[in-house]
Amino acid sequence: MNQVFITSWKDLPAPLAGSVAAAEASFIESLPHSGGLPFKVSPYFASLAGPEPGDPIRRQFLPHPAEALPDPFALQDPLGEALHKASPRLIHQYPDRALLLAGGSCAGYCRYCFRRRWIGQPKGFIRGEELRPVLAYLKAHPGIREILISGGDPLVAADALLAGLFSALREARPGILLRICTRVPITQPGRLTGESIALLKAFRPLRMVIQSNHPRELAAPAQEVLRACVDQGIPVHVQTVLLRGINDTAAVLTALFRACLDLGLTPYYLFQLDLAPGTAHFRVPLKTGLALYREVKGRLSGLGLPVYAVDLPGGGGKIHLHEGVIAGEREEAGARVYLLQGPGGKLWPYPADTP
Ligand SMILES: *Cc1c(COP(=O)(O)O)cnc(C)c1O
Image (tube, rainbow, N blue to C red):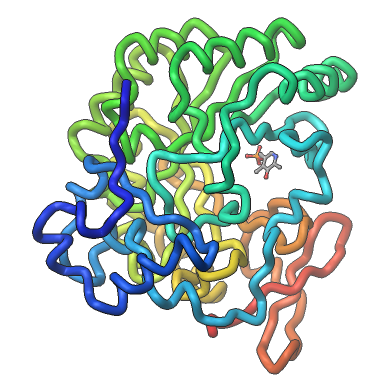
């Protein structure tokens, strides 16, 4: 399927294009020269957005000049993935699972992306020579029982490429669990044809982890493909990124998680924002997030409640967030930071406020 994406703001649907302010337009036009995360959105996802500057869909894909503001806490590699690289495309941080950077593009770029340094580089979908060290590593490490297929978004690749990758992984390691990390069901649901879903089904054990941040993303086309996946026996888990002004109210989060439950999807993680450059304006202060999570927990069935978590900045791994993880606080570079309790009691700084 040949996808045509919008990469110029002038090609947005008329009401949206008309809503782009002069400062936004010049910022977008500067991105190819500044090396910032490129602008790209699918016509479908753009059609879900309203023209108001605060619209929760618009803000997720439309570049904003605030991305250029300095952030003293920004990290080029916020998750410290380089520390855990087993090969150029494989990250092995946890004993029983590893993450594959299958490709370098997505069906649109989220402005809060934490892998923005990787995204937009001219990286094709993994195959051939690039796949060889990955397969060798998986063979040599039988403790890895699950492979996260991420990127980029693996589902922007053609079905034939996906089938080739899945077959190679299974040949190297029969029975390995495939976890497909994708936002395509939300941003480009038309990509998932009946044949694509049958392909995923044929490679079970396979689970899909999607990202959804707002109930309006679960529009009819997304509902249709997600229901089809569930009907075909593909479990679908949902990750949500906590985003300031987009989903940082108990009402929005509760509506989102309930909508997931109604579709047969399992809310999995609610992520506190990673410290990627140019994303501080999306960050909800940690204490606000904790209070919000407590409120949602009080309202919602346990089946619909994801785990509130953060990747400790700089490679400490994922931890669950609750009041008890804040072990202390101090001033750092003129700003307040919390010290979060990581594995083994090690303390990791995370900013208390947004700049
Ligand atoms: C998040 C992540 C995983 C998966 O962790 P889960 O808690 O099982 O979802 C695996 N590897 C890396 C490098 C990760 O960042």
